[in-house]
Structure formats: C-alpha cells, structure tokens
Image (tube, rainbow, N blue to C red; front, side, top):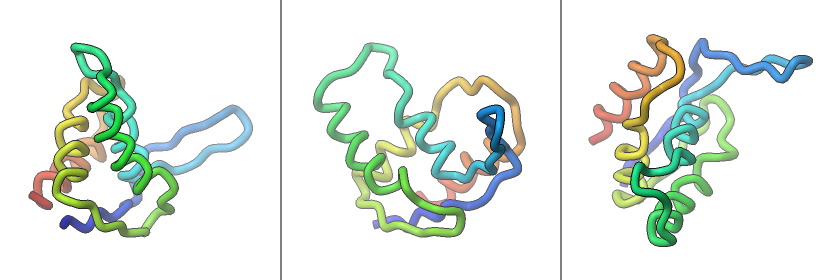
Length: 100
C-alpha cells in the first residue's frame, strides 16, 4: 500500500470565469486518462479506472491509500509527454518516485 497525497501545485486552470489551482491528483489524472501508444484494451481501462476512482475527487491536502497495483498503474501512466514545462510536474514525478 502507498499513501498518495494530493499536494498543491502552482499550476492553474481556467475555464474563462473561474481559475483553480491544480494538485498532484489533477496531474495524475492527465496521465491516467492519456491513451496508451498501442490504444485502449479493456484490461488497461479496468486498471486505470481503479486508480482514477480513488483520486478523482480528492481535495488539496487529502490522502488516499493505493494498492500496489493501483500505484504501479499511476506511476507508469504518469510518464506522458506534457504539453507544458513546469517545475511542479518535476516535483510530482519526484514525489511518485519517492513513494516507490
């Protein structure tokens, strides 16, 4: 088991009327929702949905226990090509590595 904490970042997202600060859970969801190079299989979907279900509603500062298999799929899916360069993305990657 690994304890995943939704730490606050300085990355923001705006919908035009509201701006919100993203957390590590938001960064994790980017990877978890990104399609694998070879496309989706139902087995891959099942693995990712288990992790998504646990982290998608976390508030900043919340913690959740991830089974080793859930953490592994989170770790592997976080190795995506990011659309932006930001120090908090590197901190997120370092944080996941520290949980191993």
